[in-house]
Amino acid sequence: PMDEDAELEALRQKRMAELQGLGGGGGGRGGDGEQKAEQQRQMEERRRAMLTNVLTPEARERLSRIHLVKPDKARGVEDLIINAAQRGQLREKVDEQHLIQLLEQLSQKQQKPKITIQRKQRFDDDF
Image (cartoon, rainbow, N blue to C red; front, side, top):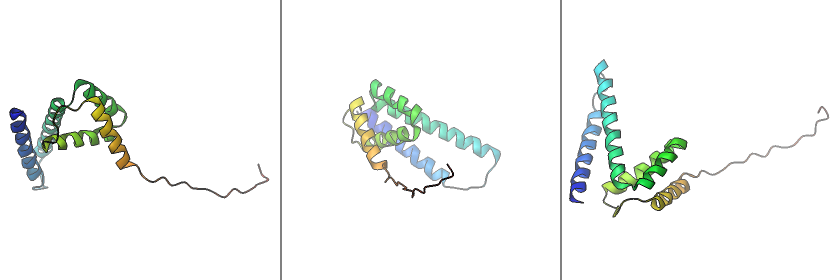
């Protein structure tokens, strides 16, 4: 657990440095795009490594299947899990049942009110 805490803190510090760096100058050269792409790739790699550390293999497999069908929903759940891990709220690895609960919570938050339109029916003799 101590190694994970140090690793999480290092990830947090790198993330803060990246955010501060990205907020800087907007002008640029051609190499600037490559650098941002490299930073993005590294960030995704750290994200995957962190998820690997906090998810059981079954939960990771389920999340990857969800990612194929609904990438935005999978990303939302990943964000929830990573944030919880960074805040130290995860006592153990997230198993499949916990992942399902997180998915249900996310679905409830994202439900939008449904609007139904009822059109007046006109009787036409042309049909």
